[in-house]
Length: 84
Image (cartoon, rainbow, N blue to C red; front, side):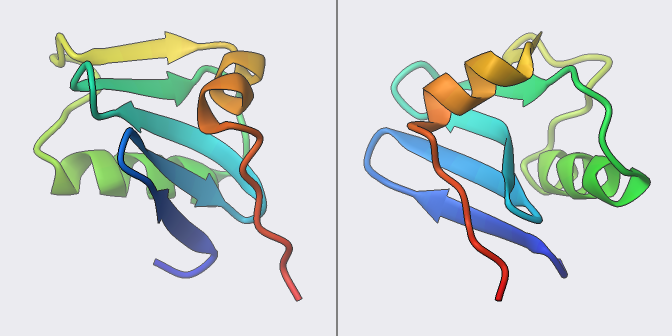
């Protein structure tokens, strides 16, 4: 997806939309954490698109938790991508 990147290490996968981490998959817990902050409609499409690829629907997922953006930043390890 344009303007979206996945960054992965052995413990987590982070979805970065534009330069902001918005979703974290904690691989050790099998838990998805998604920001509850409202960004652009494109960022919402990024989040929903990647969740759909993993077979997750926001409404029915027991392994999905909405959290404050500060928690996403903490969980992601302050990951960001500079757009050049």
